[in-house]
Amino acid sequence: MMKKSRRSFLKVAAVSAIGIGAAPAISLSSSSNSQSTSNAVKSKNHEAKTAKRWGMVINCTKISDEVAENIVEACHKNHNVPDFNHEVNTEKYPNTRPVNHKQEVKWIWEEHFKYAFPDKEDEFLADKYKNLPFLVLCNHCKSAPCVKACPTQATFKREDGIVIMDFHRCIGCRFCMAACPFGSRSFNFRDPRPFIEETNPDFPTRSKGVVEKCNLCAERLAKGEQPYCVEASEGAIVVGDLEDPDSDIRALLNENYTIRRKQTLGTEPSVYYIM
Amino acid sequence: MSKSAIFTGLVIFIIVALFPFWINLGEIKPAPEPELLGKAKAAKKCVLDKIDMRANHMSLLDEWRDSVVRNANRIYTNTEGKEFEMSLSTGDNSCLGCHEDKSKFCDKCHNYASVDPYCWECHTDPKEIK
Ligand code: SF4
Ligand code: SF4
Ligand code: SF4
Image: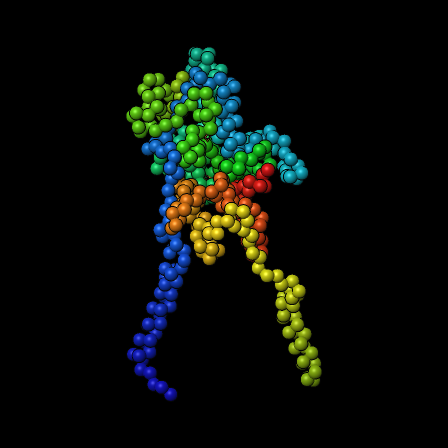
């Protein structure tokens, strides 16, 4: 029998231990994945609209009931937001529970002045404001409490100021809904698909158990297009770069007196209203 | 104990132990080949090499979704300089824009391997919603 000193045994053992330890790293670096994707590039569309901080101005004097309806419809239809008044196709979706309208899902909707601007309510408020439809949506707050509340970073702030959701990550804990002082978020208590009349193939639906809200049409801006609500608003809604002093939106803010919702809470909304 | 009793017991034991093998004997099917149709067939090469796509498409898609949702980067330029829309199903330059039939492509292997990715709970196959 061959005699091995303790020393030579340890040498061999150490070398093989290194070998075993290094094996995953070696196979990783030689795996085709890292090789072939190392030179690949991810970039924005060439025609994408960009901004330092996106904001919106809504000219309330230009929004009639009809325009408001068109805007809401344009947003909800194109983003596959379920409508609980839609009659369910029972062949395709048998066993659909009856709806609870309190669980409605909305991205942009009409609100009365006193609910949109509760801190500005006044017993002698001009009559015209009492009857105007005020469109409310996520304010893409500069200091967004929903972002701070989200434990998974499913809700986060993009570099360009848009507060957006990564639906893949949302665990449905609804902390963000409790944190948002504007009620801008909706929870999917049920599978929304049976309540989508016509699915827009260019945007996903959501699944049961995730929260959703206005994404400032990030998918449209990425293609260099205007948000749906802007297009449907007949000139009443403008989006643009709040940080760019030469932008249309800054010109509007310069020329008009504007208010924001619940300013005193300090969330710094990026949606402005011309009264 | 008699020899024959032991052998009978042994044979019964082996038959029972090999139950999962012989019960499926007649049903062994070859692994399905996903079908390349139309544009995908003509293109010959996907975003990465075939072997890479087969092994790593899930991590590629994972990378893509983070890129699109979190960094707002939607275009993927591969090593050959070809551009792709980082999207499962929107537009001609997305996955399903090229692989025109999900049921003959994605589903084939996924069903065989009994994996049930939840992509399609939210993403839509343009064919299915029409
Ligand atoms: S309006 Fe609500 S949901 Fe939108 S950013 Fe502000 S806190 Fe978040
Ligand atoms: S419900 Fe989703 S988005 Fe909201 S806080 Fe929880 S994980 Fe974040
Ligand atoms: S910006 Fe887009 S998502 Fe937000 S309310 Fe307008 S249409 Fe809807």
